[in-house]
Image 1 (spheres, rainbow, N blue to C red):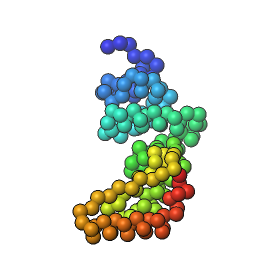
Image 2 (tube, one colour):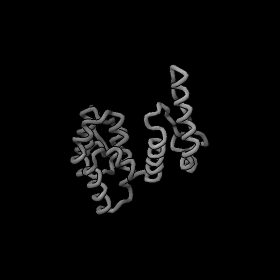
Image 3 (cartoon, rainbow, N blue to C red):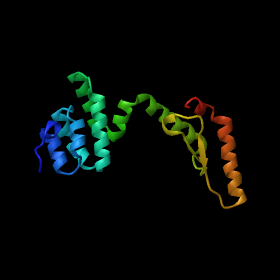
Image 4 (cartoon, rainbow, N blue to C red):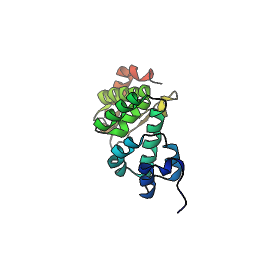
Length: 163
């Protein structure tokens, strides 16, 4: 095997490369993540796919860039305490988008729950249109879907501000 360089020479990153959890390119990108973080996150990373490990480490590196040691420690503790650290990292990294996603879930859940109608927002709420999907097998089912859509039209004003 070729000699390890840069981030790969750090024990935590080297361990992840050797275990096949990340590639060398990801190791270079994650070189700024403190070694103590890697040691504490190793159990979490072991349970993630290759792709999700790469994404987690790259996002963690982005979030930690320019942070003081105290800020970085607070982020680490917040992630370690989270039930789903990947989701918590997304909240830290993109708080506005995460809040928008939460509002979307709240509104659509309140209005469409149990209706069989699904509403999809444009990626990252960048766009001017939502998409609706449903299926039906009878006229009565179709009428229920239409009622759900009418309820959405009457009560879904909060959705339009997300776009």
